[in-house]
Length: 337
Image 1 (cartoon, rainbow, N blue to C red):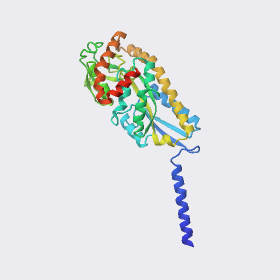
Image 2 (cartoon, helix red, strand yellow):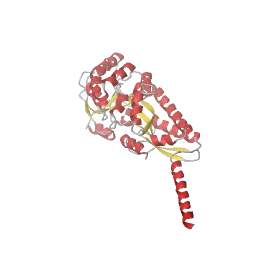
Image 3 (tube, rainbow, N blue to C red):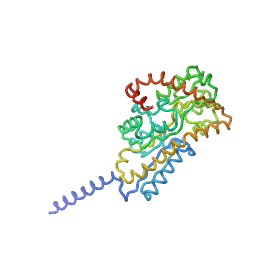
Image 4 (cartoon, one colour):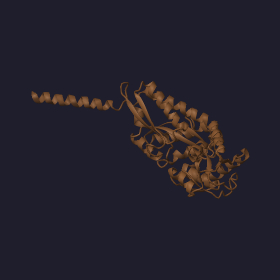
């Protein structure tokens, strides 16, 4: 009799333990969730400010049930490390660059001259576009939920030396510049007449300062001003590439949230994503003026020169990228331009 009672008690405890374990996968109305949210930009950068606003909105809308702790400026690691941590769930969310070592299709949003205007770029990098669907599906396969892409601004070249024949896409610029370790960046820069190196982003400032390289391509005017203004003397706004980051969240965590909490987070992120694209043009111009005020020479590209550059890149660089993305994919992207 005692044995039966003991067996019953053990079985009952196992059932309770199993129930508690299953419940732990779902964030219910009474649970408190603390999320580490990783950022890569400076404290004063608008993307970081946006993360802080998201954290505040989500905290208020959930009555403190979801608390987002924002860690900007690579405090939790660089974007490749953070991406892996989000995959594992050890970092819950981030606003970071999307690394492409897992899937080359994640570079598709960085195609040179994917769009030439701000509104067109917003359309290309937002839900509903062919390009966005490719990125969304590729990230989903890695166990990460893409919430939105965030527009940081069009990209130019910041350099300590003046590039020769800077407006001629076929001329040698006689400069060595740092590029991100992505084919779209390397091929674009080289086809514009620059020599390239893929030193780590974290080393770029000191590399320009010490003459290891002459400049870099990969950031908007805002990043060039906020991070590199003390080491660059020239900024050339080619606007050939678009600086972008992405709001990412661990897929299992996302699935564990109630539909109501998913909506709260999604709406807060959507607002910041739309605001980011809307602010791009004004901020690109604002920070170019701020660089000029600091004595940095802005090497302006005329509309005619930009058109010639776009034609050159699409005729020379895009065919090279067909090997990476596939001709059918790029043909569909061209149809969407």
